[in-house]
Amino acid sequence: MLNATLLEGLAHDDNSFDAVIPTETLAQITHDPRNLEDPRYLQRYPDLADLAKERERIQRPFKSQKKANVPKYRDYMIQVKQAAADQQRPFGAVPSITLWTDRGLDVITCPLNTDNPLLQDVRAQFLKVPHDVKLIAIDGETQLAARYDAGVRLHGQKARVTIHYGKSRDWAVSAFVDLNTKAISMNKEMVVTKSPDDVLARIAKRLGNQHASLYKRIKETDTVILQNEHWWMTLGKLRLFVACVWRGKPGVAIGSRPTTESEFREEDASADRVFDACTKFWDVVASYGEPIIKAFERRNETVIGTPAVIAALGAIAHTAAGGKGLPLATDTEELTAKLTEAIRSICDVNWFRGPHWDGLCGRWTPPPKQQTGQGKFRIGGGAKDGMYNVYRALFEDPESDGYQRIRTSRVALAV
Image (cartoon, rainbow, N blue to C red; front, side):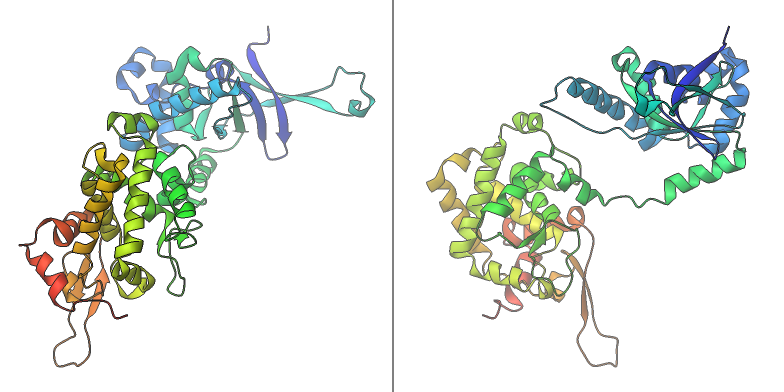
């Protein structure tokens, strides 16, 4: 009796082995890592104590974000499996799992059983994993837990694995650190704007490409605009504007979380209706909001490109379109009238950076005592930090100190 699991794949000289194996086979050579940190489970299965201790020395525990990500990863992989059956609807890509054991394992090599002359010198390779050996995931452990969580729903789906064997625990700890620190994580704003499944990003791209006022003024390739660049805002900031057109002020809390069509239906607003409201806002800006356009053109000197202000502009459009569900988005005449009134009400705002914006979307630092010269205004915080104050000062509360300050210090942008 073999008393081991044979994995077909490719062996390397550094005691590592690459294989593509069914999820059921993966369950034969590993253990659910969440059980290995459950004291009650380990009390029932005391023979797993050493494996649990070894994993604890290498891996992070399943807490907070890592724990919460397991069901999301599970659902994602189920979607990938379902989509694989439909070649017209490909979806997703699942990375490999890196497994480790300090035990030495045997690689079995044998000739291929084939009559193809091109394959006569090719040898099949198999890694022999004894049944008493359980491998620990040093990378991709959340995926491993998600596969256990999915149970039979992922049976038959293949998992890519790289197995390291016969290497010390110190090597495994070092490899865990390297695998989690050497790669540079993509900026969250960049991730969500590149996602084809995010409805807000799709609307923002369509708006940026189709509206004359925004065409070639939205930076899609990065999340940072350099001082000498002509862009008005990044695609992520335009997405923020769209989010606040859709949801109003609460839209600022969406952040980089992906949005779905079902969420739009729950809010009684379709993606097309949101796009129409966004389009009409920029139509009215082009017709009646010359100071706003000039402020964007002088973005380095003004506050209009800050996340808080962009979000507030979106919330203004939301209010003009009738609030939740954007009921006026399909009434072109009424929406145009409401937006025109709103845009004209903010055309006398002094968009230049200065002390009048202190506490709204940044901080003003006066010059040191006994020194001449101007103070310095620093953009501060993100959209969530300042959006509500900016919205109140721009549009909501004419009696507020902020409303008066940003309109009376210097009245308009120089033409």
